[in-house]
Amino acid sequence: MRNIKDESNLSEKKILLRLDLNVPLDNGKIVDTTRIDKIVPTISFLLKKNAKVIILSHMGRPKGKIVDKLSLKPVCEYLKNKINENVKLITTNLKGIETADLFNNRDEKIIMLENLRFYVEEEKNNNEFAKHLANLADIYVNEAFSCSHRMHASIFEITKFLPSYAGLQLNKEINALTKITSEIKKPITCIIGGSKISSKINIIKNLIPKFDNIIIVGAMANNILKYKGHNIGKSIQEDGCDKIIEEIFSLSVKESCKIIYPEDVTVGKNLNGLPEIKELNGILEDDLILDIGPKSIENINNIIEKSSTILWNGPAGYFENPNFAKGSLEIIKKIIKKNKTNTIYSVAGGGDTVALLNSVNAIHNFDFVSTAGGAFLEYLEGKELPGIKALN
Image (cartoon, rainbow, N blue to C red; front, side, top):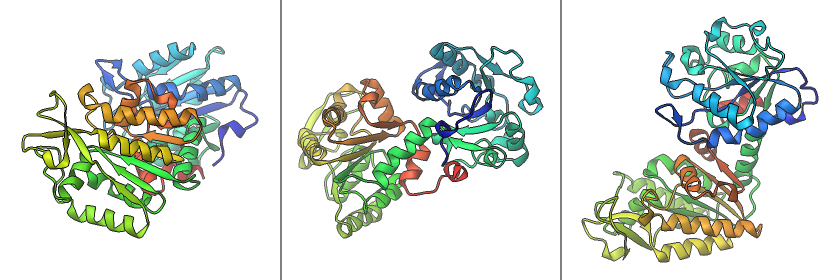
């Protein structure tokens, strides 16, 4: 991939900058600004190069219709204040806009086009729509890794019509993922959680041959505990997983990868309940497993201590209730401690993991934190992402 920082002449060039500004909104207010904050360095870089920036993004799933509550206006206002520059939002019909309509004022440096998914052509990867967007600028930059698993017009088809580059953030994301999937410094450990083991099976199968340890936590671990003959009470579980679990353990033996799961747990009677530490043979029918226990924490931290690289996708418990956040918080502390001594390369990703790290202001204490959801997971599965393929 060509990186935009390697382009020598950007002065007065119009740059179509594809971002993922699909942030959570509550009554028009932005709930989490992480995705916006992470792309500020790219915008600053382009402005320093005296380029004109045309921002492309989507918001939500309007399905080709104009939905006022999915307007990019709140994002535009936040970005304006964040970078202390005027950002003009174009709300007129995008298909009627020509390049002559943009940057008529010499002081205008940044223009944001309204939600691309207001147009059905975007998700259909429409050739004419992509060509129309391309005609607005001189250069295309993909800075939306989190959308790069989608074959959409502004991600894939558009690269056929303009010189196309990877953005600074997208390049960082690829470099970070390469370090945990290809250019690995061993020993390497993956901590993986989530509610459904079936949704992560392809990731686990792809990582087992490359990793030394796979630590399974969260609701996914309940399935393994049940498979191993332990009572899990009324804990979250997924039916019909025995074959998947057999496959995981069989492959792990073949590839000499250790599968680690909880040795003890923290339970409650409900999500808002009080915590009680229990051995695996002491779980009652009305118990709900909501976190790992102290033995499990110690074991995981010992593995982290011996690891040179770590990937984390999925909290260890129901961290939304502080009573069941200890497992996740202890893991964070251990990784941060290792990071400070430069003895580990740490990558974290996934919505819940990012929310957890945000809740304790720990995002900047990891080497890389991915805000990509589906693209992050598909990359870990070993899939080729259309948006990345288009840049190659």
